[in-house]
Amino acid sequence: MVGLGPKPPFPRKGTGTLDNLPKDLRNEIEHLERLFTVDGAKLKEVTNHFVHELEKGLSVQGGSIPMNPTWVMSFPDGNETGTYLALDMGGTNLRVCQVTLTETKSEFDIIQSKYRMPEELKTGDAEELWEYIADCLMQFIETHHGDPTKLDALPLGFTFSYPATQNYIDEGILQRWTKGFDIAGVEGHNVVPMFEAALQRRGVPIKLTALINDTTGTLIASAYTDPKMRIGCIFGTGCNAAYMENCGSIPKLAHMNLPPDMPMAINCEWGAFDNEHKVLPRTPYDVIIDKDSPRPGQQSFEKMVAGLYLGEIFRLVLVDLHDNQEIKIFPGQDIAKLRKAYSLDSSFLSLIEEDPFENLSETFELFQTKLGLTPTGPELELIRRTAELIGTRAARLSACGVAAISKKKGYKQCHVGADGSVFNKYPNFKARGAQALREILDWPEKADPKEDDPIEILAAEDGSGVGAALIAALTMQRIKQGNMHGILHPENFRTTEPLPA
Ligand code: GLC
Image (cartoon, rainbow, N blue to C red; front, side):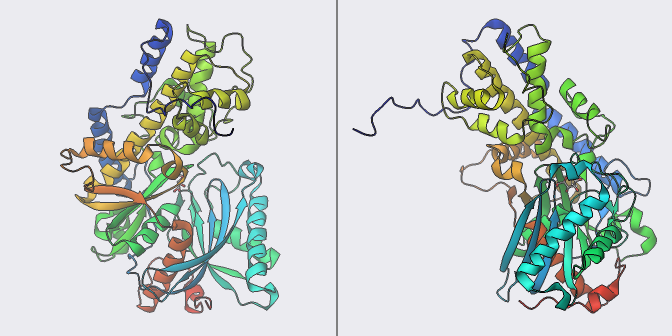
């Protein structure tokens, strides 16, 4: 007979009862709950300070949040056309795409190749980084366009997702590396000539038309298919957002005398929110993450909410509960594997939160296979609750950023396009974020559960591919119309036609 055997336990929803746990462990869980829970009042306080800091970033004096003007100066209307190359250098992968914006409104075709970003490149040598990128591009061109020596230079949008000062759309002076990157000789420099020099050395027939942040790409790509889009967010390895400002509300651009109602997409770089540690409820674990990172004192907000750090926060809690606290979890076991920094990523937390079984058997197996540890039943409860607390805090604090932009701009109703591994894969992230927005913005309870929220965070279109292509198209369009603001090399655009589809 097949199909008979012990019945699986009932699926589990949320935390089980903690009543049966030994008292010291229950105390420990309550302690963690106090550390990691951010209530509605605190969310409001964080949001209000956030609004203030967004404004400060736009001022001449500036603040922690860079609020970088991007020279993306309009939304698409869905009628953009043409074929463009796009390169995405995110935190984890390198992706090369060819995007065709088709004649049919708001539609596109895309071909793409993904390359893993070797870990050692992130902290290696600048030259090696650019050479690696040039090689990936060359491979893509040879596969899809044939002999590179016979090609005219192809236009490319480069999604470079780090804070960069852009006096021009085709320039990007790296302010600082984020997301664990640490490559000497790049901060403070324009990355475009470095990138172009590597292309030249390798004979890759490409000219860069625009340098783009992934959030700006996400905003523009999402607006291509949904006219209600106002904000683009990334909740992934890093966390950040972009939105459309009017030039008249950007005091630090006043010297350029741009028409006050002219739109300008702002890459907020909100990961740097509260670097002064005024409002964020940091725990001792957040302090350690910051201290041991390549850029202490930077990206305070990001270090509490982004995918790169969630697994590490969790790991630090468990190591602490083994080493220092009264209860000593995993007594007598060898926690060598758990001691390795950054050995658990946010997908590890996702698996714990997704464990459907009442006895947390999947979590048990995960700890055995990945860490060589054998947790007891009560320890499993603590592990699950810790993951929930860290994941919930990340979603709720992330919502403060969305609420802050909405408040600053007076958006009562809009769509927010979001992308990134945490948004797309972390269980309950969306629902927790939506609940936090409700608390911050005092929305009344829904009459019907199917009703849409006034401000909805929705899965975005592909920002670094389609968004980059659209930005190239929009820039060519505005140059044709005579808006030459923020273009360093207009000749690259004038001679550039989109690729044949
Ligand atoms: C980091 C980068 C930022 C990017 C975000 C998401 O915060 O500094 O530029 O948008 O990660 O990838």
